[in-house]
Image 1 (cartoon, protein in one colour):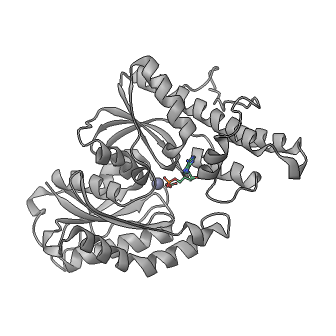
Image 2 (cartoon, rainbow, N blue to C red):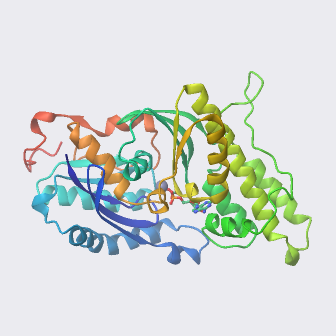
Image 3 (cartoon, rainbow, N blue to C red):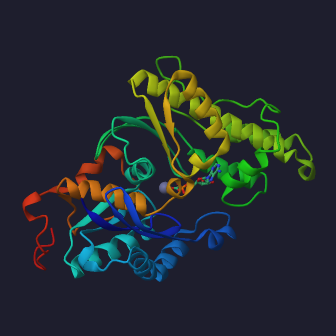
Length: 360
Ligand code: KG4
Ligand code: ZN
């Protein structure tokens, strides 16, 4: 059993949490959404500066909320990839410094592995194998979760991520940022069958379509064309939002169900901010029930970016004797297949203090 303090600063949330295996002891999230809203999206430099200003406060809050001191923390972790490089660097540097100062093992965590672990926080009895549908602002992936650190990405988006498509369509409709929650709210009062929209199939060079990959650029263009057919000050916003949401929900549901059935996986766990979407939840739950599949939607606070999911992943790695070198850097892009490259497998030195001359 490992108690880990983790820092997540990959985008616009400064988050610190303390988790003991799958049990959350504290979970602090300071969102920058209001700061970035005026720009219509996340400004990387502004995000980094805000992380610098907030991270120490968030660490103190996390320790206070958990009523722990450093002697009770067994590892310090931070998201190291993928994400905004400057933003990641703030959390990673803070975690490395704290690990050195308090003589604790240090672990870098892949952000998407964190999103996968969010399901374990709400379902402590969940065990691999299962399928994870990860739908966030930066990613749309179908991942076969085989074990801690062992993942196979079976499907992904060829262009925009699902959340990105929500944000871009919301901008098109002048609804502000982030677009997902606003479209979701407006869709409640609209007609999801008002406008026919493309499903976003991905052609294969050999003919036919990729069964699990998706594409949202065609859908985005179709939305642009559709809006141009109405006077700008008289858009049927609710019907447009409902039709768009239904198209995304149907496309994701179809691929997730096909993938789970083909791979013989009976559980689908959802992660990422778009998991909050009511249309997706509804479509997927109905389709999964028809096929006898179990579908898990973690509570919203675990779906959007948070550090509890990062700490949970780090605790599992720490339990297996994994730790990262203090020379570890950040990466804007990194595939889930490379997760194990973040760790050194050196159980013999796991609980020994880090010597100042031996940083690797
Ligand atoms: O996972 P997340 O918090 O951050 C990363 O991208 O890693 O996801 C943020 C994305 C944004 O694109 C936002 O518009 C979308 O999740 N989102 C939603 C909803 N709530 C948040 N999309 C659709 N419906 C929602 N209710
Ligand atoms: Zn995320």
